[in-house]
Length: 483
Picture 1 (cartoon, rainbow, N blue to C red):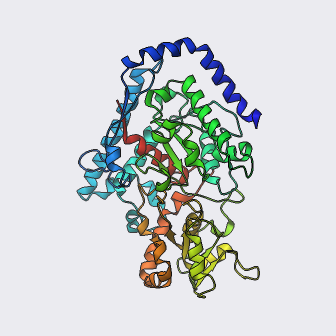
Picture 2: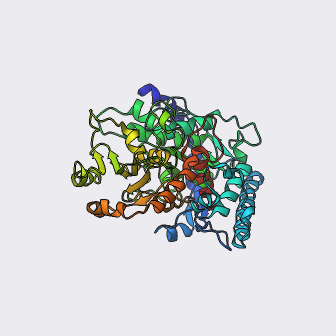
Picture 3: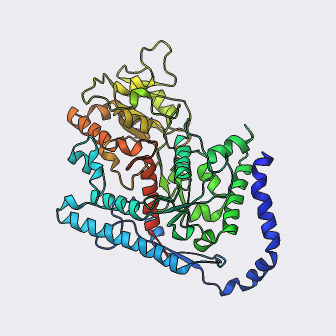
């Protein structure tokens, strides 16, 4: 453990020691430097540049619309002409999205900006209705592929940095990190760039899941070593490069699927407050801010691949004898009342803490045979059941509090899922039983339309989960104007 963190602390202390005279001078002269102003656009796109339906409206909108002013030391070696190019590039993208929306409002849907998404097995109507604003999304996605460039910091070594788990509940974290690592940045069409001066966003490639594995002392409940690692890492890249200090981290992003991700990010104030945090544990009650943070899906691939029985969508008219299904650990505040109310109470609602050993159905067989799949939060709000329900076209029933659903800046979850409040659990059978076959069929067609957005491919393919995560980061970057 000491060896794992030694590489990052020693260079930092040596760097600060050598630059002590310069830092002392900055303390006396900092009052003459102008602060960096980060102006966050409001989050709707209509006649003005506002992303309509792309970034969800929240109680934090008013806060996000105000200018956030933070002081930072002057960044050395800033190529201002290059920086101006990057901001002009983003301005062109905003204009293109605005124009696409204007065209669509006149009824010309054919000019939405990307026809390749029509390769979906869903029909045209099903395809369009699952998005808040199809014209804005397709054009924004096209602009991302054309313009967006991410710089990945090279500091650090595996397994804590540049690596991540790809075969467990933290699959999203590992697969995203490794996909970016495999990009060379040489191709003009690559979303990664090797030139930080041409980057629109900067990725901090550490893995919280790997830190927990290698730095955390089991049962200690001490996050200190992990928090110090994150703090030191940000300190190193901030000292070695001008980019972090230039924007107080506002054009930087991290990604974590571990439930400690939100707390670990608090190790650096600017990382928590200014940076884009892509998190599975997207809980507004724990500081998740939808106007700047990104909710990502929790994908659990035990072997690294989608289970065989889930690789293809089930036939449209597959028999589903069970009304609802859930099996999972009894943890968190929501699952106990669910199991108390419905475990062994009704044969049409299959609710278990552990699947019966003598059952003829395994976990995925139950999902494939159920009309609705219950997705209650545990200790963290996210659940891999949501993605598994999408794969099996078992209509997800979200039972959570404070959970910002993945890609809800783009996707209309009400077109392919249901939401049930905890206090409605006693009426669960009645609520689900009201849905007609036509309504359920419509929701399942919506699931088929969005499936591609929740699948990992090797290598990554257009509109898959890797690209959707990057698109969510791209939207947040579009909404920040750096003066």
